[in-house]
Amino acid sequence: MPHHRLPESANFEHQIAGKKTHLVVLENNRGVRVALTDYGARIVGIQVPDKSGQLIDVVLGFNTINDYVHANEPYHGVTVGRFANRIANGRFTIDGETFYMQPNNGPNVLHGGANGFHTRVWDSRVVYLEKADFYYISTDGEEGFPGELSVMVKYRLTDNNELIISYRAETDKATVINLTNHAFFNLNGEGNSDVLNHVLQIHADKYLPVDEHQIPTGTLEAVAGTPFDFRETKPIMQDIAQANDQLAKGNGGFDHNYILNTELLGTKLPVATIISPLTGIRLDVLTTEPGLQLYTGNFLSGKDIGKQGKPYHKHGAFCLETQHFPDSPNQPEFPSTLLLPGQVFQSETTYRFSVEKSW
Image (cartoon, rainbow, N blue to C red; front, side):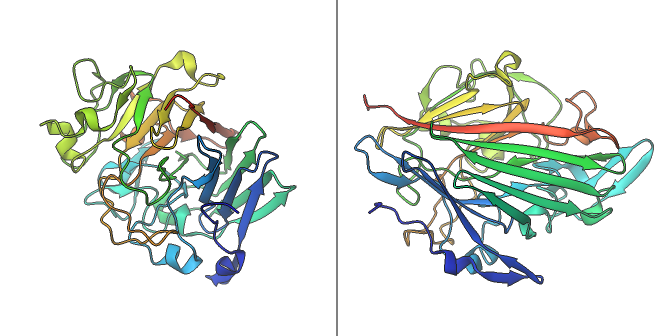
């Protein structure tokens, strides 16, 4: 019997805006299990073995669909869209036409707006035990974004303990797109203390400093000599409490986009690796995306009570969100997030789990 139980499927059978919701559980031949729901095409839990072989759920989340709907933190495990991260002042321009959105994060639009993809019930198709596909059609003008956007997110669990997330989208009008997954991880086990003991490596020489509204200033700053330097493995706690203007803007922690070293993108080599010394669980992140948002749960408040009945406090999780850069539609020197009719947006990110016995 797993040490951490995944939620009961019955607790996810519900209706939201007239659409039925479900829990889907993938399983590989090594006993790793991934729970997903069509509400937000989100990850509910991932059970992986620790160094003693015990299954540990390493993703924050809830036991019922109702808890997700009413959560203080709305982004647990979701597929974020239409545009992940922040767009300054809720506006951007395509071909001279300005599009306006309702800000939901101070003056910014965050994660696609208040009614972004995280609030939608996606259509789903489960293929065998190791695959689940989610589909959503975002209407023209939804949350202010132009174009009808057809989106597909595929989750695949391999026997190498990899969760591969593939994204695909097409539009009928010029639009902007930035998709990611917003799993909150704790490799100690969800709800089991904070993640400051985790050791992290990010293969990035530069990151994007932000202004007081957490919008990139446009400068690509070297990580060398700053708390943001994770080129060599180090504990998250090592520099997180430094007196640093950028850490203060992240509410006392990391909430910044790293510019990944391009030679690793789309390869079998990880762009980031993180390990819990407590459990020995290791997570490698592989991606085709140019950016990685490191977020250390600085806004978790203890208001949300998770699957084990434990509150999720500040620094109780980390996110490694593979994506294009924040505010790209307003910063033309950043890699483009424009999607035109006839083009196909494609992206892939892998979360690969293993165990470091030496810890």
